Image (tube, rainbow, N blue to C red; front, side, top):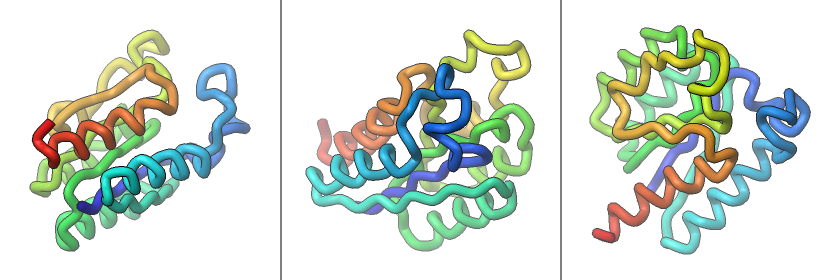
Length: 146
């Protein structure tokens, strides 16, 4: 099984950017935990980050075309603004779980709406960086029929 973890704008600054909201773990820390978890299930996960909407869209389509089994996606601020990302997710068969480190529903009003959630298989918000592992575990255990 092959999975993809996508991270949107500003997530390359995790550990430095607003640690009171996002914590002290870096994106590399999150990726290492995901790779360790995937290995326990004899699966693979590739992790990518971009501050550019078009690049994220291209990766979603490439995931579909290359047979990726699921996408874990923290779209960052694009969650609340990107119809283009919503349309890309709606246009592929590969399931996507939307992940947010902070509880977006306890933050500013503009963060309460997700354009992506209606076309994702689920949304994990407010579990800190563990949300990434929860999303991957959901995919892995579904594959095993658990």
